[in-house]
Length: 233
Length: 67
Image 1 (cartoon, rainbow over the protein chains, first blue to last red):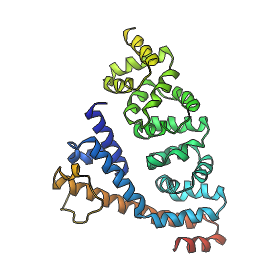
Image 2 (image 1 turned 90 degrees about the vertical axis):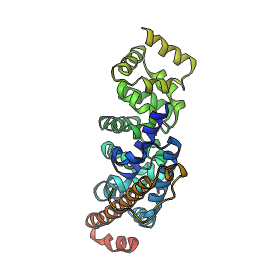
Image 3 (image 1 turned 45 degrees about the vertical axis):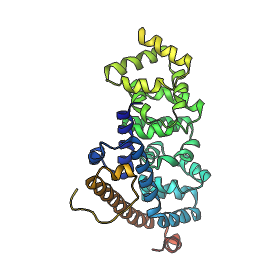
Image 4 (image 1 turned 90 degrees about the horizontal axis):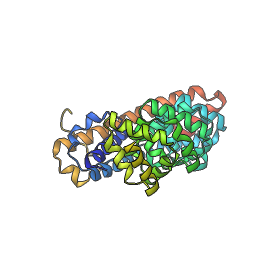
């Protein structure tokens, strides 16, 4: 991945953690991607602990209420931002049980606010249908960073099914934010030759060739050969 | 980003500090704003929680959250 693309990706992640538009971080435009990543992790950790006591108490409340009531509180009282924070403090099984009781669009909202280092338990218990609906909502909102973080937590079979949810532009724009680049091979193997043609065409039309090249670095020889064939067709 | 922000919120990587005082102040200010936003969201959420939880359970909830 180019340094510029890596820097843009890290600035996007940092803006997300701070809850600001990326333009608010213009003073960091010359920072190295590695420093931005370390800064993002430091701030996420700081915010995570800042009100940890209040969240611990919220979790204690959740433990005393029926699951259905907890889901209702998450949706109608906590809202997506605080639910995302609280979900990160739940035991993985609790998080998975809660996620199953929440509608896909609310889960998409939660995902936008979640600490992306802790999204695993939220994602892993969901059915492919729910993941698909939440994923489509995130695509509609162009939440490329969030989608990129999810890729590493979706099992391979579900990932193959989910590829159909995303168009060529989405795949290209999510690419730089995928924390598990070994998954690109699974994604490409799930694409038909026709969809590979679309991907190559979209990369040219939307000036996203750099994003496509960054994914190629992680492809097996078989998938790289398929992509080469699409590029010359 | 307004006046120079005095409160240090997080440790910054050396590479960020090296960008200069404007960058450092901006980061600390944005972190502080995020903290304040989060605190306000928590207060509002507690108010909404107490309206949703059935009345017989509100005492227990208040006790747990220290409200």
